[in-house]
Image (cartoon, rainbow, N blue to C red; front, side):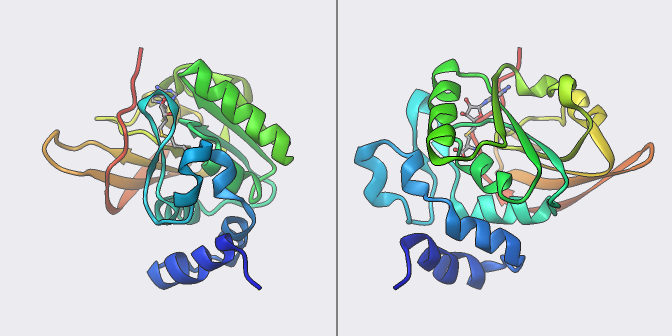
Length: 208
Ligand code: SAH
């Protein structure tokens, strides 16, 4: 017998470019329904973004998987996530890294996500309330940075907090009339270069 999360991996993720076995394993192990309100749970394994509190969304599973894969997390890494939302993507990432610091600007979402993560035993995730465009200097630098909200430019603080060899995956709003460009930024010493992955639609990164 397979679980709904295992079927999601087989039917929605493997056939669509998710090849990293560690990422697939993590996606099979995190129960997405637990991060949703009871009335949304029957939709948990549809491959789409779903509404959570505060007018925000839990990202589409395929997008979570492809972003996580693009960040190439390693077991010893420390990761920063901007935009905790439900806590789902942080839970997936926490299975692949040593520690995840996740920042959410809505206190109600941060509190709820933190409770869910604690209840399910994801104890290497620390949720903080704040403006994630400033990063979280206390634990910097980060080997992995995942940004789950779109900015028109990449916040300098996030570039500054990326470790040598570190990877940041972020949706960049290039124009208000087009989908955002999901990018991977990689630091090599003083140089930071990026490549584009694919177009995406994220909620805006609200700064200040
Ligand atoms: N990763 C989440 C999806 C988050 S949606 C999940 O798996 O459920 C994006 C989130 O970013 C929203 O919760 C929104 O409140 C938050 N957000 C927007 N601007 C932010 C900022 N400047 N700092 C921190 N969080 C922010």
